[in-house]
Image (cartoon, rainbow, N blue to C red):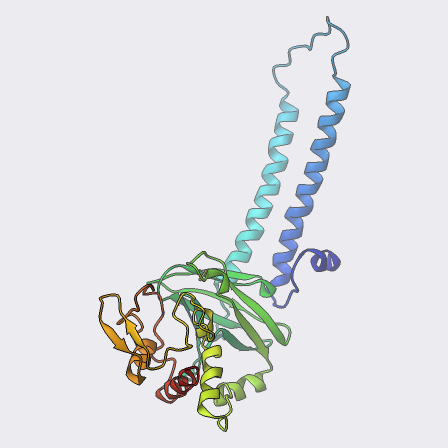
Amino acid sequence: MNRLTEFMLPPARSTMAGETDALFHFINVTSIILLTGITIAIIYFSWKYRRRSDDDVTPVITHNSKLEITWSVIPLILVMIVFGWGFTGYMNLTTAPDDAYEIRVVGKSWLWEFHYDNGAVSINELNAPVNRPVKLVMNSDDVIHSFFIPDFRIKRDVLPNRYTSVWFEATEIGESIIFCTEYCGTQHSNMDATVNILTQEEFDTWLEEGDSIDEDMPPAERGEALVTRNGCTACHSADGTSGVGPSFEGLWMSDRTMQDGEVITADENYIRESILEPNEKITEGYDPVMPSYQGVISDRQIDDIIEYIKSLE
Ligand code: CUA
């Protein structure tokens, strides 16, 4: 079974994975056995009852109770097993243990935001302790997204105006991928993130210190690190190519024509507003799709990002 899992499925790194995989293999193996049996029967019967001569007439058979009951009851039992098994798994996934550590997840077009109990925030990187149940309470800022960690075998839709939740207990230290599995717009395929499983100690240290962007770096370099960490690069290039949003190159102090025809110079205030209230002013030719970074990026960090954009003149 383990070798079958290795062959067909991503690594199993949560307490949930064993049961999910067992059900998956059960459905798969049962289907293969049935498919093989039915195919062999079809081939055998078409050979056995082939037409041999012109006066070869098949007798009229109205029904056969024994056979009919057999082919109704066996599938019924199989389907009920799959239902019971699947429903138990679904309920387990939905009901987190009472002592679970809670993390808030916000899906936005097109990034994942993680809020921790001490106020720490991380973007596109979920940090969590190993061997401890972690409950994710999730909602969306805009459209429907879906949160999926294949290695943990957990997946749940993330909706606007409603909370959904899912939980996991990671069994291994290391990184796994998080996908968005609900089509949510042009950058849906880039809406991935990393889950980083740490020891409890490492996790506590990370919570205390947050992401260590080196304080000794020049502001423009810190800005660049922030832009990468906050997922800005998914839509904004640094080399002049136009993405979902305008490029950062040549942005600084340039004249921007807005959708309403107003011309604005891209100065500090414009950049600040674009980060905190991105849909206030929209550059001509672009859509109002950027999520707000209010409460996520601090004033200090905005300064650094401005310095970075300046450096791309
Ligand atoms: Cu979010 Cu697809």
